[in-house]
Length: 386
Image 1 (cartoon, rainbow, N blue to C red):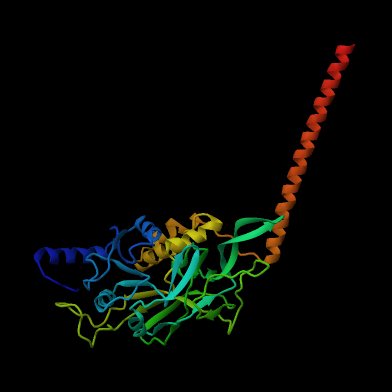
Image 2: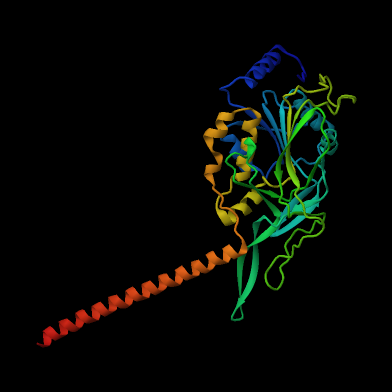
């Protein structure tokens, strides 16, 4: 344990927290390291079942009583913050990290991509995990609402069209792992590929992949440009192949600070972890961002799949398997399977046909009703004249 000022009360609380951590029936506590704003939906989702503590780790320690540490979109973490993450893992805890070398900025309806240093690059690299400075594009993707102008009789009409956006990688059919239980689909936005070096003392489980048709780009120009036909201009370049986007590493970890001076004074440095330690890495800074979840909800209503996946990751990490099966998080949002362009055209024309038939039925009913009224008036007129 990392002990600062040792008092009787602090020592007692540390022992109680340790006992609760391995006991059943207590509300689990997640320490969430995330930017000050932009991740409210994630926090609310976790708070439905867990106690969530927002922290910045700037004192070099994870809050006492934490059962799991979740780090989302880290930005230039210093040595003290990395030390806190490292030592929590060394205690046998689980660290969930959502990070990548890129970060999106939403500004006046535009998407501005910029490079981002998390501060975790060397720490992850010491465990054989590398995030390539490229982004994955996949033709199997979610749609992005794009405002477009079309002209009808010379009059400009502004409308929003849902266009396929390859940077929104649509991950499906990967439900072998409990983290993905009842999650039919997950969209990873602006994700980077993960390279995993051979692990001798640890087990590696590949969690999330792009499709075999995906390709890579290092360009920060991610705003769609529409051609004359109204199609976005993203075309595959380079090698198309399956890319690793999420991974679980478990087993014994050696501390990144084992042969270094601890950046926190009076710290009791742990130089390795027990086999119960887990590191879950998902290669995206933005897939849990409120703005991205809002974009996902534009075409399909409330979108919970990615936040449900993170809640599943917490349950699995804390081995609350009952919650995984009982809650059925995915039942909140059943995603339809993807359709080919031909199927989309069939359904589109079918909708038009049904609408036309409905109009014809209304017109026929109105005509029959008018004929009935005319006959009734004619009969009444004949009776009066007689």
